[in-house]
Image 1 (cartoon, helix red, strand yellow):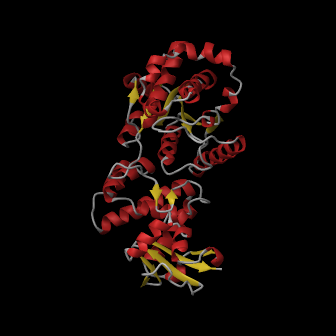
Image 2: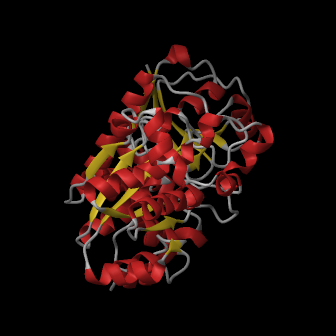
Image 3: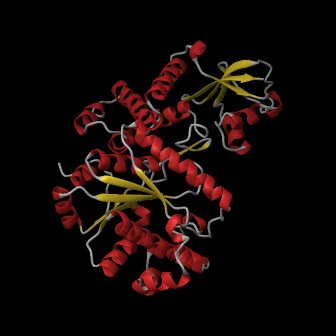
Amino acid sequence: MNILDELKERGLVKQIIYEEDLHNLLDKEKVVCYMGFDPSADSLQMGNIAALCLLLRMKKAGHKPIALIGGATGRIGDPTGRNDMRPQKTEEQLKHNVACITKQIKDFFALNGEDITVVNNDDWTSKLSYYDFLNEIAMYMSVNRMLASECFKARMENGLTLAEFVYMPMQANDFLHLFKKYNCVVEFGGDDQWANIIAGVELVRKKEGSPVYAATTPLLTKADGTKMGKSAGGAVWVSREKTSDYDFYQFFRNTEDVKVEEMFRVLTLLPMEEIKELCSGTGKALNFAKERLAYEVTKLVRGEESAKKAQQEARANFGGNTEEMPVVEFERKEVSNILDLLIKAKMASSKGEAKRLVDGKGVKVDDEVIESYDFPLIKTEFVLQKGKKSIQKVKLV
């Protein structure tokens, strides 16, 4: 199967420019492709896993993927969909974030038996003079076309800065640089990046007179259309320092029924035939599919040992075997009441949410329903439970 057909079948591609020509090229040649990653934090998030899976599939099909970290573009921040300008990162923050994300991408590929070229666009953007920018990039880009782009509309209403306006030409120049240095001919990116991606395709075609191509990946959403990747404690991170193996596993174990097959297609390497068979049932069969999904994604991102351990812990939790449950330690001086504990345990993101959980009788300590915000935390070790699916064995030290 042509890799483009495979990516489309799995739901990893949404929009494509020059699709027929790209399809024909991928039938004949192995190509260099790239995708960008924003260093706005020191870890990738759940939404980036689909991007990593796409690049991994390209690599396993014999193509050469490049992961580009936006050390330069990250200084400005993408204005797409924003109502205000993004907070600026310090030089130290950016360098730290770039280093962390670079390691995560390389580790992901190494875990799955592959390697990948990782580049930082600050390496060439920082050397670009103002004159070179005007002569080599800006003269090929239409201001009218840029202003009509969807990515600028929200910021236009509140005052688009010149720095944000230049974000698109900077990203376009990335494609030009990679084309010249690596003969990179395909850019992939999130669907919200379509305008920026098209700008890069047009720049290379106009300036170099060579055919290049692009495609976007759909953004992962919940059944109600909201962005996927958030939990009660915040974002689901690739970094285990930010999201434990157990919480990472549990996030996917709790996938909505209607989204299970999509998550298998986009976030695992399982064959389509096996995915369809796994997702064909209901009830216990679907619960088994969710457990398999959680295992496969955790294995892909965190490794097989982490996946096995997280699965064993989850089974112990929900099988009632508290002896085998993992223990999470908190300092007693930092936990004065049940509300503080819920926040520390990442079962609630704020005191307001914690109060709502208690008011709704959704919190238990050792099977006792908590009805007071001032519930005394006398025991040193106990089982804390939120709802039916979020359980932790807690130790106060």
